[in-house]
Length: 623
Image 1: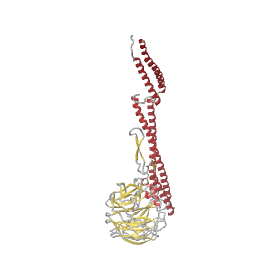
Image 2: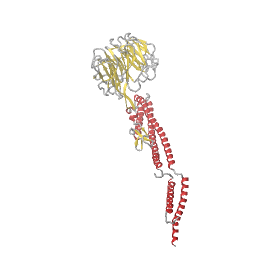
Image 3: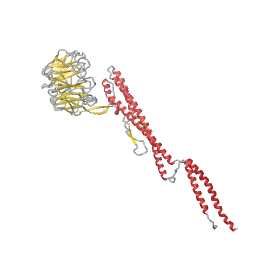
Image 4: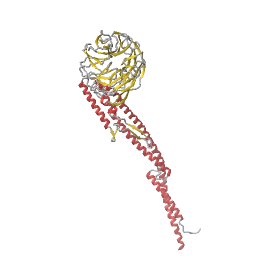
Protein backbone atom coordinates (compact mmCIF):
# COMPACT_ATOMS: atom_id res chain seq x y z
CA UNK A 1 0.00 0.00 0.00
CA UNK A 2 1.47 3.35 -0.98
CA UNK A 3 1.47 6.54 0.96
CA UNK A 4 -0.74 9.25 -0.51
CA UNK A 5 -1.99 12.60 0.64
CA UNK A 6 -5.84 12.30 0.80
CA UNK A 7 -8.75 14.08 2.61
CA UNK A 8 -11.27 11.25 2.23
CA UNK A 9 -11.25 10.39 5.89
CA UNK A 10 -11.64 13.99 6.89
CA UNK A 11 -14.45 14.52 4.45
CA UNK A 12 -16.25 11.39 5.62
CA UNK A 13 -15.93 12.51 9.24
CA UNK A 14 -17.19 15.98 8.32
CA UNK A 15 -20.18 14.50 6.49
CA UNK A 16 -21.16 12.35 9.44
CA UNK A 17 -20.68 15.28 11.76
CA UNK A 18 -23.02 17.39 9.59
CA UNK A 19 -25.71 14.67 9.72
CA UNK A 20 -25.39 14.44 13.45
CA UNK A 21 -25.57 18.20 13.90
CA UNK A 22 -28.71 18.30 11.77
CA UNK A 23 -30.28 15.52 13.85
CA UNK A 24 -29.37 17.48 17.00
CA UNK A 25 -30.89 20.64 15.51
CA UNK A 26 -34.10 18.79 14.56
CA UNK A 27 -34.33 17.24 18.02
CA UNK A 28 -33.89 20.62 19.65
CA UNK A 29 -36.62 22.07 17.40
CA UNK A 30 -39.04 19.25 18.26
CA UNK A 31 -38.25 19.42 21.96
CA UNK A 32 -38.60 23.20 22.07
CA UNK A 33 -41.99 23.25 20.22
CA UNK A 34 -43.32 20.00 21.61
CA UNK A 35 -44.26 18.98 18.10
CA UNK A 36 -42.81 16.16 16.06
CA UNK A 37 -43.73 17.94 12.79
CA UNK A 38 -42.94 21.65 12.55
CA UNK A 39 -42.58 22.15 8.82
CA UNK A 40 -43.50 20.35 5.62
CA UNK A 41 -40.03 18.78 5.31
CA UNK A 42 -40.54 16.98 8.61
CA UNK A 43 -43.46 14.94 7.16
CA UNK A 44 -45.35 16.30 4.19
CA UNK A 45 -48.55 14.21 4.68
CA UNK A 46 -48.72 14.71 8.44
CA UNK A 47 -48.02 18.44 8.14
CA UNK A 48 -50.80 18.87 5.55
CA UNK A 49 -53.36 16.93 7.62
CA UNK A 50 -52.39 18.73 10.81
CA UNK A 51 -53.01 22.09 9.13
CA UNK A 52 -56.50 20.93 8.09
CA UNK A 53 -57.25 19.64 11.57
CA UNK A 54 -56.02 22.88 13.11
CA UNK A 55 -58.42 24.86 10.86
CA UNK A 56 -61.30 22.64 11.92
CA UNK A 57 -60.41 22.91 15.60
CA UNK A 58 -60.26 26.69 15.37
CA UNK A 59 -63.58 26.69 13.44
CA UNK A 60 -65.31 24.66 16.15
CA UNK A 61 -63.86 26.96 18.79
CA UNK A 62 -65.49 29.89 17.03
CA UNK A 63 -68.77 28.01 16.56
CA UNK A 64 -68.87 27.44 20.32
CA UNK A 65 -68.58 31.20 20.76
CA UNK A 66 -71.34 31.67 18.17
CA UNK A 67 -73.63 29.28 20.02
CA UNK A 68 -72.98 30.94 23.36
CA UNK A 69 -73.74 34.34 21.81
CA UNK A 70 -76.95 33.02 20.26
CA UNK A 71 -77.97 31.50 23.57
CA UNK A 72 -77.40 34.85 25.26
CA UNK A 73 -79.57 36.58 22.64
CA UNK A 74 -82.32 34.01 23.09
CA UNK A 75 -82.16 34.25 26.88
CA UNK A 76 -82.49 38.03 26.66
CA UNK A 77 -85.48 37.75 24.34
CA UNK A 78 -87.11 35.03 26.43
CA UNK A 79 -86.88 37.06 29.63
CA UNK A 80 -88.31 40.12 27.88
CA UNK A 81 -91.23 38.09 26.52
CA UNK A 82 -91.70 36.61 29.98
CA UNK A 83 -92.22 40.13 31.32
CA UNK A 84 -94.67 40.87 28.49
CA UNK A 85 -96.53 37.67 29.38
CA UNK A 86 -96.87 38.87 32.96
CA UNK A 87 -98.24 42.18 31.68
CA UNK A 88 -100.77 40.41 29.43
CA UNK A 89 -101.93 38.25 32.32
CA UNK A 90 -102.32 41.34 34.49
CA UNK A 91 -104.38 43.03 31.76
CA UNK A 92 -106.58 39.93 31.62
CA UNK A 93 -107.00 40.01 35.37
CA UNK A 94 -108.12 43.64 35.17
CA UNK A 95 -110.52 42.79 32.31
CA UNK A 96 -112.13 40.09 34.45
CA UNK A 97 -112.54 42.61 37.25
CA UNK A 98 -113.97 45.25 34.89
CA UNK A 99 -116.41 42.75 33.38
CA UNK A 100 -118.37 42.74 36.61
CA UNK A 101 -121.46 44.92 36.67
CA UNK A 102 -120.80 46.00 40.26
CA UNK A 103 -118.22 48.68 39.36
CA UNK A 104 -118.91 52.37 39.06
CA UNK A 105 -117.68 54.52 36.18
CA UNK A 106 -114.87 55.97 38.33
CA UNK A 107 -113.72 52.44 39.20
CA UNK A 108 -113.59 51.50 35.55
CA UNK A 109 -111.73 54.70 34.70
CA UNK A 110 -109.03 53.82 37.22
CA UNK A 111 -108.75 50.28 35.89
CA UNK A 112 -108.57 51.57 32.33
CA UNK A 113 -105.74 53.94 33.29
CA UNK A 114 -103.84 50.96 34.65
CA UNK A 115 -104.46 48.99 31.45
CA UNK A 116 -103.16 51.84 29.30
CA UNK A 117 -100.06 52.17 31.50
CA UNK A 118 -99.39 48.44 31.22
CA UNK A 119 -99.86 48.66 27.45
CA UNK A 120 -97.23 51.42 27.27
CA UNK A 121 -94.76 49.29 29.21
CA UNK A 122 -95.55 46.32 26.98
CA UNK A 123 -94.71 48.43 23.92
CA UNK A 124 -91.56 49.85 25.54
CA UNK A 125 -90.20 46.36 26.17
CA UNK A 126 -90.85 45.35 22.56
CA UNK A 127 -89.07 48.42 21.19
CA UNK A 128 -86.04 48.45 23.52
CA UNK A 129 -85.19 44.78 24.12
CA UNK A 130 -81.81 44.41 22.38
CA UNK A 131 -78.46 42.59 22.40
CA UNK A 132 -75.29 44.15 21.02
CA UNK A 133 -77.42 47.00 19.65
CA UNK A 134 -79.58 44.48 17.74
CA UNK A 135 -83.32 44.90 18.41
CA UNK A 136 -84.90 41.57 19.25
CA UNK A 137 -88.67 41.94 19.58
CA UNK A 138 -89.72 44.83 17.34
CA UNK A 139 -89.98 42.60 14.25
CA UNK A 140 -86.66 43.67 12.73
CA UNK A 141 -84.69 40.61 13.90
CA UNK A 142 -86.64 38.21 11.74
CA UNK A 143 -84.81 34.93 11.11
CA UNK A 144 -81.02 34.80 11.45
CA UNK A 145 -78.65 31.93 10.68
CA UNK A 146 -76.44 30.70 13.54
CA UNK A 147 -73.21 28.97 12.43
CA UNK A 148 -73.04 26.02 14.84
CA UNK A 149 -70.25 24.02 13.14
CA UNK A 150 -66.91 24.45 11.39
CA UNK A 151 -68.10 23.59 7.87
CA UNK A 152 -70.36 25.18 5.29
CA UNK A 153 -74.10 24.58 5.85
CA UNK A 154 -73.54 23.67 9.50
CA UNK A 155 -76.07 26.30 10.57
CA UNK A 156 -79.76 26.75 11.27
CA UNK A 157 -82.17 29.64 11.46
CA UNK A 158 -83.28 31.27 14.69
CA UNK A 159 -86.43 33.39 14.48
CA UNK A 160 -87.72 35.91 17.01
CA UNK A 161 -91.36 36.83 16.54
CA UNK A 162 -92.59 40.38 16.48
CA UNK A 163 -93.76 41.11 20.04
CA UNK A 164 -95.04 44.62 19.53
CA UNK A 165 -98.52 45.35 20.87
CA UNK A 166 -99.97 45.65 17.36
CA UNK A 167 -98.73 42.19 16.49
CA UNK A 168 -99.47 40.38 19.76
CA UNK A 169 -102.89 41.84 20.47
CA UNK A 170 -104.77 40.60 17.42
CA UNK A 171 -108.44 39.98 16.84
CA UNK A 172 -110.45 38.47 14.06
CA UNK A 173 -112.75 40.82 12.20
CA UNK A 174 -115.11 40.26 9.34
CA UNK A 175 -115.02 41.95 6.00
CA UNK A 176 -118.75 41.92 5.42
CA UNK A 177 -118.73 38.77 3.31
CA UNK A 178 -119.44 35.14 4.10
CA UNK A 179 -118.15 31.73 3.04
CA UNK A 180 -120.16 29.23 1.05
CA UNK A 181 -123.21 28.00 2.92
CA UNK A 182 -123.58 24.74 4.77
CA UNK A 183 -127.13 23.38 4.73
CA UNK A 184 -129.18 21.37 7.21
CA UNK A 185 -132.48 19.64 6.54
CA UNK A 186 -135.57 21.32 8.03
CA UNK A 187 -139.27 20.59 8.20
CA UNK A 188 -141.68 21.72 5.52
CA UNK A 189 -141.48 25.40 4.53
CA UNK A 190 -139.11 26.72 7.20
CA UNK A 191 -139.78 30.33 8.20
CA UNK A 192 -138.09 32.35 10.93
CA UNK A 193 -134.95 31.42 12.89
CA UNK A 194 -133.64 32.38 16.33
CA UNK A 195 -130.35 31.67 18.09
CA UNK A 196 -129.46 31.15 21.74
CA UNK A 197 -127.65 28.66 23.97
CA UNK A 198 -130.43 26.16 24.61
CA UNK A 199 -128.36 23.47 26.34
CA UNK A 200 -126.04 25.57 28.48
CA UNK A 201 -122.77 24.50 26.86
CA UNK A 202 -121.67 28.03 25.93
CA UNK A 203 -122.26 27.45 22.21
CA UNK A 204 -124.94 29.07 20.11
CA UNK A 205 -127.74 26.81 18.88
CA UNK A 206 -130.42 27.45 16.25
CA UNK A 207 -134.17 26.97 16.31
CA UNK A 208 -136.35 27.50 13.24
CA UNK A 209 -140.10 27.34 12.80
CA UNK A 210 -141.51 24.94 10.18
CA UNK A 211 -144.51 26.77 8.71
CA UNK A 212 -145.59 23.78 6.63
CA UNK A 213 -145.60 21.34 9.53
CA UNK A 214 -146.59 21.77 13.19
CA UNK A 215 -143.00 21.68 14.48
CA UNK A 216 -139.95 23.65 15.40
CA UNK A 217 -136.51 22.26 14.55
CA UNK A 218 -133.65 22.53 17.05
CA UNK A 219 -130.01 22.40 15.90
CA UNK A 220 -127.49 22.20 18.75
CA UNK A 221 -124.25 23.96 17.90
CA UNK A 222 -120.82 22.35 18.15
CA UNK A 223 -119.06 25.70 18.60
CA UNK A 224 -117.12 25.36 15.34
CA UNK A 225 -119.83 26.56 12.96
CA UNK A 226 -121.40 23.12 12.54
CA UNK A 227 -124.61 21.85 14.08
CA UNK A 228 -126.11 18.52 15.08
CA UNK A 229 -129.00 17.05 13.16
CA UNK A 230 -132.41 18.54 13.87
CA UNK A 231 -134.62 17.62 16.76
CA UNK A 232 -138.30 18.45 16.44
CA UNK A 233 -140.89 19.61 18.95
CA UNK A 234 -144.60 20.07 18.36
CA UNK A 235 -146.18 23.51 17.98
CA UNK A 236 -149.34 24.76 16.23
CA UNK A 237 -150.10 24.81 12.53
CA UNK A 238 -148.29 27.25 10.22
CA UNK A 239 -145.64 28.44 12.70
CA UNK A 240 -144.50 31.45 10.71
CA UNK A 241 -142.47 33.16 13.41
CA UNK A 242 -140.79 32.62 16.76
CA UNK A 243 -138.86 34.43 19.46
CA UNK A 244 -136.51 33.35 22.24
CA UNK A 245 -136.16 34.48 25.85
CA UNK A 246 -136.35 33.33 29.47
CA UNK A 247 -140.10 33.34 30.03
CA UNK A 248 -140.21 31.71 33.48
CA UNK A 249 -137.11 33.16 35.14
CA UNK A 250 -135.17 29.88 35.45
CA UNK A 251 -132.18 31.10 33.42
CA UNK A 252 -132.96 28.72 30.55
CA UNK A 253 -133.88 29.86 27.04
CA UNK A 254 -137.53 29.32 26.11
CA UNK A 255 -139.31 29.69 22.76
CA UNK A 256 -142.61 31.28 21.72
CA UNK A 257 -144.05 30.65 18.25
CA UNK A 258 -146.93 32.23 16.36
CA UNK A 259 -149.22 29.62 14.79
CA UNK A 260 -151.03 31.43 11.99
CA UNK A 261 -153.56 28.75 11.06
CA UNK A 262 -154.54 28.11 14.68
CA UNK A 263 -154.56 31.77 15.75
CA UNK A 264 -152.44 30.78 18.75
CA UNK A 265 -149.08 31.35 20.36
CA UNK A 266 -147.19 28.23 21.51
CA UNK A 267 -145.04 28.58 24.62
CA UNK A 268 -142.27 25.97 24.92
CA UNK A 269 -140.31 26.15 28.16
CA UNK A 270 -136.75 24.91 27.86
CA UNK A 271 -135.32 22.04 29.92
CA UNK A 272 -131.75 23.34 29.61
CA UNK A 273 -130.56 20.39 27.52
CA UNK A 274 -131.88 21.51 24.13
CA UNK A 275 -135.29 19.96 24.67
CA UNK A 276 -138.60 21.57 25.63
CA UNK A 277 -141.63 20.84 27.74
CA UNK A 278 -144.92 20.28 25.89
CA UNK A 279 -146.33 23.49 24.54
CA UNK A 280 -148.81 25.71 26.29
CA UNK A 281 -150.99 27.86 24.00
CA UNK A 282 -152.32 31.38 24.13
CA UNK A 283 -155.25 32.57 22.07
CA UNK A 284 -154.08 35.21 19.63
CA UNK A 285 -155.28 37.25 16.67
CA UNK A 286 -155.79 36.10 13.11
CA UNK A 287 -153.20 36.39 10.36
CA UNK A 288 -150.20 36.50 12.73
CA UNK A 289 -147.05 37.90 11.11
CA UNK A 290 -144.34 38.47 13.70
CA UNK A 291 -143.47 38.19 17.38
CA UNK A 292 -141.01 39.82 19.82
CA UNK A 293 -140.28 39.30 23.53
CA UNK A 294 -139.46 42.27 25.76
CA UNK A 295 -140.36 43.78 29.14
CA UNK A 296 -143.12 46.29 28.36
CA UNK A 297 -144.28 47.09 31.89
CA UNK A 298 -141.08 47.32 33.94
CA UNK A 299 -141.73 44.29 36.11
CA UNK A 300 -138.57 42.43 35.07
CA UNK A 301 -140.61 39.75 33.27
CA UNK A 302 -140.73 39.18 29.54
CA UNK A 303 -143.90 40.10 27.70
CA UNK A 304 -145.07 39.20 24.20
CA UNK A 305 -145.96 41.52 21.32
CA UNK A 306 -147.29 40.21 18.00
CA UNK A 307 -147.91 41.87 14.63
CA UNK A 308 -151.35 40.71 13.52
CA UNK A 309 -151.44 41.50 9.79
CA UNK A 310 -154.91 41.88 8.40
CA UNK A 311 -156.35 41.94 11.92
CA UNK A 312 -154.92 45.48 11.92
CA UNK A 313 -153.63 45.20 15.46
CA UNK A 314 -150.56 44.65 17.55
CA UNK A 315 -151.36 42.27 20.44
CA UNK A 316 -149.75 42.55 23.87
CA UNK A 317 -149.46 39.69 26.39
CA UNK A 318 -147.97 40.74 29.73
CA UNK A 319 -145.89 37.98 31.31
CA UNK A 320 -146.41 36.62 34.82
CA UNK A 321 -142.81 35.45 35.06
CA UNK A 322 -143.70 31.76 35.27
CA UNK A 323 -144.32 31.08 31.59
CA UNK A 324 -147.94 32.16 31.75
CA UNK A 325 -149.40 35.42 30.45
CA UNK A 326 -152.27 37.79 31.07
CA UNK A 327 -155.09 38.11 28.54
CA UNK A 328 -154.11 39.97 25.44
CA UNK A 329 -154.68 43.64 24.83
CA UNK A 330 -154.44 45.28 21.42
CA UNK A 331 -153.20 48.44 19.76
CA UNK A 332 -154.64 49.41 16.40
CA UNK A 333 -152.05 49.26 13.60
CA UNK A 334 -152.95 48.79 9.94
CA UNK A 335 -151.63 45.59 8.31
CA UNK A 336 -148.89 45.10 10.92
CA UNK A 337 -146.07 42.90 9.65
CA UNK A 338 -142.51 43.73 10.77
CA UNK A 339 -141.88 44.19 14.50
CA UNK A 340 -138.88 45.46 16.47
CA UNK A 341 -138.37 46.75 20.00
CA UNK A 342 -136.09 49.40 21.53
CA UNK A 343 -136.19 52.43 23.84
CA UNK A 344 -136.74 55.10 21.18
CA UNK A 345 -137.19 58.15 23.43
CA UNK A 346 -134.79 57.45 26.27
CA UNK A 347 -137.45 57.18 28.98
CA UNK A 348 -136.43 53.67 30.01
CA UNK A 349 -139.59 52.11 28.56
CA UNK A 350 -139.48 49.64 25.71
CA UNK A 351 -141.16 50.92 22.54
CA UNK A 352 -142.25 49.10 19.39
CA UNK A 353 -141.61 49.77 15.70
CA UNK A 354 -144.18 48.22 13.40
CA UNK A 355 -143.79 47.73 9.64
CA UNK A 356 -146.70 47.19 7.29
CA UNK A 357 -147.46 44.99 4.32
CA UNK A 358 -150.10 47.40 3.04
CA UNK A 359 -149.65 49.46 -0.10
CA UNK A 360 -148.47 52.42 1.95
CA UNK A 361 -145.24 53.89 3.26
CA UNK A 362 -146.33 54.06 6.90
CA UNK A 363 -144.13 52.80 9.70
CA UNK A 364 -145.86 52.93 13.08
CA UNK A 365 -144.07 54.00 16.26
CA UNK A 366 -145.59 52.76 19.54
CA UNK A 367 -144.00 54.64 22.43
CA UNK A 368 -144.39 52.62 25.61
CA UNK A 369 -145.92 54.12 28.75
CA UNK A 370 -144.17 51.55 30.93
CA UNK A 371 -147.40 49.69 31.79
CA UNK A 372 -148.07 47.81 28.55
CA UNK A 373 -149.94 50.68 26.89
CA UNK A 374 -148.63 52.92 24.10
CA UNK A 375 -148.79 56.27 22.36
CA UNK A 376 -148.99 55.99 18.58
CA UNK A 377 -147.17 57.98 15.90
CA UNK A 378 -146.00 57.27 12.34
CA UNK A 379 -143.09 57.93 10.06
CA UNK A 380 -142.98 57.59 6.27
CA UNK A 381 -140.67 55.17 4.45
CA UNK A 382 -139.42 55.92 0.94
CA UNK A 383 -141.22 52.98 -0.68
CA UNK A 384 -144.42 51.00 -0.23
CA UNK A 385 -144.85 47.99 2.02
CA UNK A 386 -142.07 48.65 4.54
CA UNK A 387 -142.54 45.23 6.10
CA UNK A 388 -139.07 44.56 7.55
CA UNK A 389 -137.88 46.72 10.45
CA UNK A 390 -134.89 46.72 12.79
CA UNK A 391 -133.40 49.15 15.30
CA UNK A 392 -129.94 50.18 16.49
CA UNK A 393 -127.57 53.11 16.89
CA UNK A 394 -126.22 53.71 13.39
CA UNK A 395 -124.56 57.10 13.94
CA UNK A 396 -122.95 56.63 17.32
CA UNK A 397 -124.97 59.26 19.17
CA UNK A 398 -126.40 56.85 21.74
CA UNK A 399 -129.93 57.21 20.32
CA UNK A 400 -131.88 54.43 18.69
CA UNK A 401 -132.36 54.64 14.93
CA UNK A 402 -134.58 52.65 12.56
CA UNK A 403 -133.85 50.84 9.29
CA UNK A 404 -136.78 49.69 7.18
CA UNK A 405 -136.85 47.27 4.25
CA UNK A 406 -139.54 47.42 1.58
CA UNK A 407 -140.81 45.20 -1.18
CA UNK A 408 -139.62 47.79 -3.71
CA UNK A 409 -135.98 48.64 -4.27
CA UNK A 410 -134.32 50.31 -1.31
CA UNK A 411 -133.86 50.61 2.42
CA UNK A 412 -135.14 53.59 4.39
CA UNK A 413 -132.93 54.85 7.22
CA UNK A 414 -134.31 57.03 10.04
CA UNK A 415 -131.93 58.57 12.57
CA UNK A 416 -133.47 59.02 15.98
CA UNK A 417 -133.60 62.37 17.76
CA UNK A 418 -133.79 60.70 21.15
CA UNK A 419 -137.37 61.83 21.91
CA UNK A 420 -139.31 59.30 19.85
CA UNK A 421 -139.15 61.36 16.67
CA UNK A 422 -136.92 60.80 13.68
CA UNK A 423 -135.27 62.56 10.80
CA UNK A 424 -136.70 62.18 7.35
CA UNK A 425 -135.83 58.92 5.66
CA UNK A 426 -132.61 58.57 3.71
CA UNK A 427 -132.16 55.84 1.14
CA UNK A 428 -129.78 52.92 0.82
CA UNK A 429 -130.11 51.23 -2.56
CA UNK A 430 -131.08 47.57 -2.20
CA UNK A 431 -132.76 44.82 -4.17
CA UNK A 432 -136.46 44.11 -4.26
CA UNK A 433 -138.43 41.98 -1.80
CA UNK A 434 -136.26 42.13 1.30
CA UNK A 435 -136.89 38.97 3.35
CA UNK A 436 -134.56 39.51 6.29
CA UNK A 437 -133.02 42.60 7.89
CA UNK A 438 -130.55 43.01 10.76
CA UNK A 439 -127.98 45.49 12.12
CA UNK A 440 -124.61 44.31 13.39
CA UNK A 441 -120.94 45.31 13.46
CA UNK A 442 -119.54 43.02 10.79
CA UNK A 443 -115.96 44.32 10.64
CA UNK A 444 -115.19 45.26 14.23
CA UNK A 445 -114.96 49.01 13.62
CA UNK A 446 -117.59 49.83 16.23
CA UNK A 447 -120.12 50.93 13.61
CA UNK A 448 -123.45 49.35 12.80
CA UNK A 449 -123.64 47.66 9.41
CA UNK A 450 -126.75 46.46 7.57
CA UNK A 451 -127.24 42.80 6.71
CA UNK A 452 -130.25 41.87 4.62
CA UNK A 453 -131.47 39.13 2.33
CA UNK A 454 -133.66 39.35 -0.74
CA UNK A 455 -135.83 36.88 -2.56
CA UNK A 456 -133.24 36.18 -5.27
CA UNK A 457 -131.17 33.89 -2.99
CA UNK A 458 -128.57 36.39 -1.81
CA UNK A 459 -127.48 38.04 1.40
CA UNK A 460 -126.10 41.57 1.19
CA UNK A 461 -124.08 43.80 3.49
CA UNK A 462 -123.85 47.58 3.57
CA UNK A 463 -121.00 48.79 5.74
CA UNK A 464 -121.80 51.67 8.04
CA UNK A 465 -119.82 54.91 7.98
CA UNK A 466 -120.72 55.67 11.58
CA UNK A 467 -122.65 58.84 10.73
CA UNK A 468 -125.95 57.29 9.71
CA UNK A 469 -124.89 56.70 6.12
CA UNK A 470 -123.81 53.45 4.52
CA UNK A 471 -121.59 52.29 1.72
CA UNK A 472 -123.15 50.69 -1.32
CA UNK A 473 -124.38 47.16 -0.55
CA UNK A 474 -122.34 44.23 -1.82
CA UNK A 475 -123.30 40.62 -2.33
CA UNK A 476 -122.05 38.99 0.86
CA UNK A 477 -123.15 35.40 0.32
CA UNK A 478 -125.38 33.00 -1.58
CA UNK A 479 -128.53 31.48 -0.05
CA UNK A 480 -131.02 28.85 -1.16
CA UNK A 481 -134.43 29.30 -2.73
CA UNK A 482 -136.99 31.34 -0.82
CA UNK A 483 -134.73 32.81 1.86
CA UNK A 484 -136.21 34.25 5.05
CA UNK A 485 -135.73 34.30 8.81
CA UNK A 486 -132.30 35.96 8.80
CA UNK A 487 -130.48 35.63 12.13
CA UNK A 488 -126.94 36.64 13.15
CA UNK A 489 -124.60 35.11 15.71
CA UNK A 490 -121.06 33.95 16.34
CA UNK A 491 -121.53 30.28 15.55
CA UNK A 492 -117.85 29.26 15.48
CA UNK A 493 -116.66 31.38 18.44
CA UNK A 494 -114.17 33.46 16.46
CA UNK A 495 -115.67 36.77 17.60
CA UNK A 496 -117.15 37.58 14.20
CA UNK A 497 -120.82 37.66 13.20
CA UNK A 498 -122.07 34.75 11.07
CA UNK A 499 -125.40 34.30 9.24
CA UNK A 500 -128.11 31.68 9.40
CA UNK A 501 -131.26 31.79 7.25
CA UNK A 502 -133.98 29.41 6.20
CA UNK A 503 -134.58 28.47 2.56
CA UNK A 504 -138.34 27.89 2.44
CA UNK A 505 -138.48 26.48 -1.10
CA UNK A 506 -135.58 24.08 -0.52
CA UNK A 507 -136.51 22.92 2.97
CA UNK A 508 -133.06 23.76 4.28
CA UNK A 509 -131.34 25.93 6.85
CA UNK A 510 -128.28 27.73 5.49
CA UNK A 511 -125.34 28.65 7.73
CA UNK A 512 -122.77 31.07 6.30
CA UNK A 513 -119.64 31.64 8.36
CA UNK A 514 -118.00 35.04 8.06
CA UNK A 515 -114.80 35.47 6.08
CA UNK A 516 -112.30 36.87 8.55
CA UNK A 517 -108.94 38.58 8.70
CA UNK A 518 -106.63 39.39 11.58
CA UNK A 519 -106.06 42.98 12.65
CA UNK A 520 -104.57 44.86 15.56
CA UNK A 521 -106.78 44.94 18.65
CA UNK A 522 -104.82 47.67 20.45
CA UNK A 523 -107.73 50.05 20.01
CA UNK A 524 -109.90 47.57 21.92
CA UNK A 525 -107.52 47.30 24.89
CA UNK A 526 -109.99 49.24 26.94
CA UNK A 527 -112.03 48.45 30.05
CA UNK A 528 -113.86 51.76 30.38
CA UNK A 529 -117.19 49.94 29.94
CA UNK A 530 -118.40 46.48 30.82
CA UNK A 531 -118.92 45.57 27.15
CA UNK A 532 -115.40 46.70 26.24
CA UNK A 533 -113.96 44.66 29.10
CA UNK A 534 -115.87 41.64 27.81
CA UNK A 535 -114.53 42.19 24.30
CA UNK A 536 -111.00 42.46 25.66
CA UNK A 537 -111.47 39.11 27.41
CA UNK A 538 -112.48 37.62 24.09
CA UNK A 539 -109.10 38.13 22.42
CA UNK A 540 -106.65 38.53 25.33
CA UNK A 541 -106.36 34.75 25.72
CA UNK A 542 -105.18 34.49 22.11
CA UNK A 543 -102.60 37.19 22.85
CA UNK A 544 -101.37 35.27 25.88
CA UNK A 545 -101.14 32.13 23.74
CA UNK A 546 -99.15 34.08 21.13
CA UNK A 547 -96.61 35.18 23.75
CA UNK A 548 -96.49 31.71 25.23
CA UNK A 549 -95.85 30.21 21.79
CA UNK A 550 -93.06 32.74 21.13
CA UNK A 551 -91.35 31.90 24.40
CA UNK A 552 -91.82 28.18 23.79
CA UNK A 553 -90.20 28.45 20.35
CA UNK A 554 -87.25 30.27 21.91
CA UNK A 555 -86.95 27.43 24.42
CA UNK A 556 -86.90 24.94 21.55
CA UNK A 557 -84.09 26.91 19.88
CA UNK A 558 -82.14 26.95 23.15
CA UNK A 559 -82.48 23.19 23.52
CA UNK A 560 -81.21 22.72 19.97
CA UNK A 561 -78.34 25.13 20.58
CA UNK A 562 -77.38 23.21 23.72
CA UNK A 563 -77.17 20.04 21.63
CA UNK A 564 -75.18 21.89 18.97
CA UNK A 565 -72.85 23.19 21.69
CA UNK A 566 -72.33 19.67 22.96
CA UNK A 567 -71.62 18.42 19.44
CA UNK A 568 -69.20 21.24 18.62
CA UNK A 569 -67.38 20.72 21.93
CA UNK A 570 -67.00 17.01 21.23
CA UNK A 571 -65.79 17.67 17.71
CA UNK A 572 -63.31 20.23 18.99
CA UNK A 573 -62.06 17.77 21.59
CA UNK A 574 -61.74 14.82 19.21
CA UNK A 575 -60.09 16.79 16.43
CA UNK A 576 -57.66 18.39 18.87
CA UNK A 577 -56.81 14.97 20.23
CA UNK A 578 -56.31 13.58 16.71
CA UNK A 579 -54.04 16.47 15.75
CA UNK A 580 -51.94 16.10 18.86
CA UNK A 581 -51.57 12.37 18.30
CA UNK A 582 -50.20 13.20 14.85
CA UNK A 583 -47.76 15.97 15.65
CA UNK A 584 -46.96 15.83 19.36
CA UNK A 585 -43.33 15.11 20.25
CA UNK A 586 -42.26 11.93 22.05
CA UNK A 587 -40.01 13.57 24.65
CA UNK A 588 -38.53 10.31 25.97
CA UNK A 589 -37.52 9.10 22.55
CA UNK A 590 -36.22 12.46 21.31
CA UNK A 591 -34.29 13.14 24.53
CA UNK A 592 -32.53 9.80 24.18
CA UNK A 593 -31.86 10.51 20.52
CA UNK A 594 -30.51 13.97 21.37
CA UNK A 595 -28.20 12.56 24.02
CA UNK A 596 -26.93 9.91 21.65
CA UNK A 597 -26.34 12.45 18.88
CA UNK A 598 -24.59 14.86 21.21
CA UNK A 599 -22.19 12.07 22.30
CA UNK A 600 -21.76 10.99 18.71
CA UNK A 601 -21.02 14.58 17.67
CA UNK A 602 -18.28 14.84 20.28
CA UNK A 603 -16.78 11.61 19.01
CA UNK A 604 -17.05 12.76 15.42
CA UNK A 605 -15.28 16.03 16.22
CA UNK A 606 -12.45 14.03 17.79
CA UNK A 607 -12.29 11.69 14.80
CA UNK A 608 -12.24 14.63 12.42
CA UNK A 609 -9.28 16.06 14.32
CA UNK A 610 -7.47 12.79 14.09
CA UNK A 611 -8.19 12.57 10.37
CA UNK A 612 -6.69 15.97 9.81
CA UNK A 613 -3.58 15.17 11.96
CA UNK A 614 -2.93 11.81 10.28
CA UNK A 615 -1.79 13.38 7.04
CA UNK A 616 0.98 15.26 8.86
CA UNK A 617 2.96 12.01 9.27
CA UNK A 618 4.03 12.19 5.57
CA UNK A 619 6.19 15.22 6.42
CA UNK A 620 8.56 12.94 8.39
CA UNK A 621 9.74 11.47 5.08
CA UNK A 622 11.34 14.80 4.19
CA UNK A 623 13.46 15.00 7.30
